Image 1 (spheres, rainbow, N blue to C red):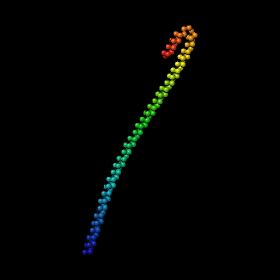
Image 2 (cartoon, one colour; image 1 turned 30 degrees about the vertical axis):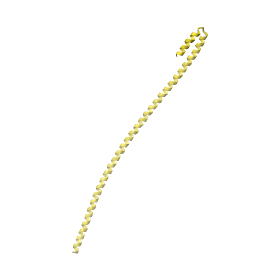
Image 3 (tube, one colour; image 1 turned 60 degrees about the vertical axis):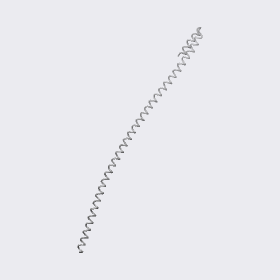
Image 4 (cartoon, rainbow, N blue to C red; image 1 turned 45 degrees about the vertical axis):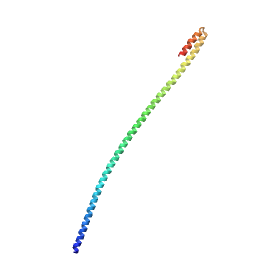
Length: 137
Protein backbone atom coordinates (compact mmCIF):
# COMPACT_ATOMS: atom_id res chain seq x y z
CA UNK A 1 0.00 0.00 0.00
CA UNK A 2 2.83 2.43 0.76
CA UNK A 3 4.43 1.75 -2.61
CA UNK A 4 1.14 2.33 -4.36
CA UNK A 5 0.50 5.59 -2.46
CA UNK A 6 4.02 6.77 -3.19
CA UNK A 7 3.58 5.83 -6.84
CA UNK A 8 0.22 7.68 -6.98
CA UNK A 9 1.78 10.73 -5.29
CA UNK A 10 4.71 10.71 -7.68
CA UNK A 11 2.34 10.24 -10.62
CA UNK A 12 0.19 13.16 -9.37
CA UNK A 13 3.30 15.24 -8.86
CA UNK A 14 4.51 14.30 -12.36
CA UNK A 15 1.12 15.25 -13.84
CA UNK A 16 1.12 18.55 -11.90
CA UNK A 17 4.59 19.38 -13.20
CA UNK A 18 3.58 18.43 -16.79
CA UNK A 19 0.40 20.56 -16.51
CA UNK A 20 2.45 23.44 -15.09
CA UNK A 21 4.96 23.15 -17.96
CA UNK A 22 2.16 23.02 -20.52
CA UNK A 23 0.53 26.11 -18.97
CA UNK A 24 3.90 27.85 -18.98
CA UNK A 25 4.42 26.88 -22.65
CA UNK A 26 0.94 28.21 -23.51
CA UNK A 27 1.70 31.47 -21.69
CA UNK A 28 5.06 31.78 -23.49
CA UNK A 29 3.29 31.13 -26.82
CA UNK A 30 0.64 33.78 -26.00
CA UNK A 31 3.28 36.29 -24.91
CA UNK A 32 5.33 35.62 -28.08
CA UNK A 33 2.22 36.14 -30.22
CA UNK A 34 1.44 39.38 -28.34
CA UNK A 35 5.05 40.49 -28.81
CA UNK A 36 4.85 39.82 -32.56
CA UNK A 37 1.50 41.69 -32.69
CA UNK A 38 2.88 44.65 -30.75
CA UNK A 39 6.02 44.76 -32.93
CA UNK A 40 3.81 44.73 -36.03
CA UNK A 41 1.67 47.57 -34.65
CA UNK A 42 4.82 49.49 -33.70
CA UNK A 43 6.24 49.10 -37.22
CA UNK A 44 2.91 50.19 -38.70
CA UNK A 45 2.79 53.19 -36.38
CA UNK A 46 6.39 54.07 -37.20
CA UNK A 47 5.59 53.88 -40.93
CA UNK A 48 2.55 56.11 -40.42
CA UNK A 49 4.61 58.61 -38.44
CA UNK A 50 7.26 58.66 -41.18
CA UNK A 51 4.56 59.17 -43.82
CA UNK A 52 2.98 62.01 -41.87
CA UNK A 53 6.39 63.58 -41.28
CA UNK A 54 7.33 63.31 -44.96
CA UNK A 55 3.96 64.69 -46.00
CA UNK A 56 4.20 67.64 -43.60
CA UNK A 57 7.80 68.27 -44.55
CA UNK A 58 6.90 68.27 -48.23
CA UNK A 59 3.95 70.60 -47.58
CA UNK A 60 6.04 73.06 -45.59
CA UNK A 61 8.84 72.96 -48.14
CA UNK A 62 6.35 73.70 -50.92
CA UNK A 63 4.78 76.45 -48.81
CA UNK A 64 8.21 77.95 -48.10
CA UNK A 65 9.07 77.90 -51.81
CA UNK A 66 5.74 79.54 -52.64
CA UNK A 67 6.31 82.27 -50.07
CA UNK A 68 9.85 82.87 -51.27
CA UNK A 69 8.59 83.15 -54.85
CA UNK A 70 5.94 85.65 -53.73
CA UNK A 71 8.54 87.70 -51.87
CA UNK A 72 10.79 87.64 -54.93
CA UNK A 73 7.86 88.74 -57.09
CA UNK A 74 7.06 91.57 -54.67
CA UNK A 75 10.69 92.67 -54.66
CA UNK A 76 10.76 92.68 -58.46
CA UNK A 77 7.55 94.72 -58.56
CA UNK A 78 8.96 97.10 -55.95
CA UNK A 79 12.17 97.56 -57.94
CA UNK A 80 10.16 98.20 -61.10
CA UNK A 81 7.97 100.70 -59.25
CA UNK A 82 11.08 102.38 -57.85
CA UNK A 83 12.63 102.61 -61.32
CA UNK A 84 9.39 104.00 -62.81
CA UNK A 85 9.08 106.51 -59.98
CA UNK A 86 12.66 107.70 -60.47
CA UNK A 87 12.12 108.01 -64.23
CA UNK A 88 8.90 109.95 -63.69
CA UNK A 89 10.51 112.31 -61.18
CA UNK A 90 13.50 112.80 -63.48
CA UNK A 91 11.19 113.64 -66.40
CA UNK A 92 9.21 116.04 -64.22
CA UNK A 93 12.35 117.82 -63.03
CA UNK A 94 13.67 118.03 -66.59
CA UNK A 95 10.31 119.32 -67.79
CA UNK A 96 10.22 121.92 -65.01
CA UNK A 97 13.77 123.03 -65.82
CA UNK A 98 12.92 123.15 -69.54
CA UNK A 99 9.74 125.16 -68.86
CA UNK A 100 11.62 127.56 -66.58
CA UNK A 101 14.39 127.98 -69.15
CA UNK A 102 11.94 128.59 -72.00
CA UNK A 103 9.92 130.98 -69.86
CA UNK A 104 13.04 132.89 -68.83
CA UNK A 105 14.20 132.96 -72.46
CA UNK A 106 10.87 134.33 -73.67
CA UNK A 107 10.80 136.87 -70.84
CA UNK A 108 14.29 138.07 -71.78
CA UNK A 109 13.41 138.06 -75.47
CA UNK A 110 10.20 139.99 -74.76
CA UNK A 111 12.06 142.58 -72.72
CA UNK A 112 14.72 142.96 -75.42
CA UNK A 113 12.11 143.23 -78.18
CA UNK A 114 9.98 145.60 -76.14
CA UNK A 115 13.01 147.74 -75.53
CA UNK A 116 13.88 147.70 -79.23
CA UNK A 117 10.34 148.50 -80.32
CA UNK A 118 9.98 151.17 -77.71
CA UNK A 119 12.71 152.99 -79.48
CA UNK A 120 10.90 152.61 -82.81
CA UNK A 121 7.92 154.64 -83.84
CA UNK A 122 5.29 151.90 -84.19
CA UNK A 123 5.63 150.66 -80.61
CA UNK A 124 2.01 150.37 -79.52
CA UNK A 125 0.86 147.93 -82.27
CA UNK A 126 4.02 145.88 -82.01
CA UNK A 127 3.68 145.68 -78.23
CA UNK A 128 0.12 144.38 -78.50
CA UNK A 129 1.18 141.72 -81.04
CA UNK A 130 4.12 140.61 -78.91
CA UNK A 131 2.03 140.57 -75.73
CA UNK A 132 -0.69 138.55 -77.49
CA UNK A 133 1.91 136.05 -78.80
CA UNK A 134 3.52 135.80 -75.38
CA UNK A 135 0.24 135.20 -73.60
CA UNK A 136 -0.90 132.77 -76.24
CA UNK A 137 2.00 130.38 -75.60
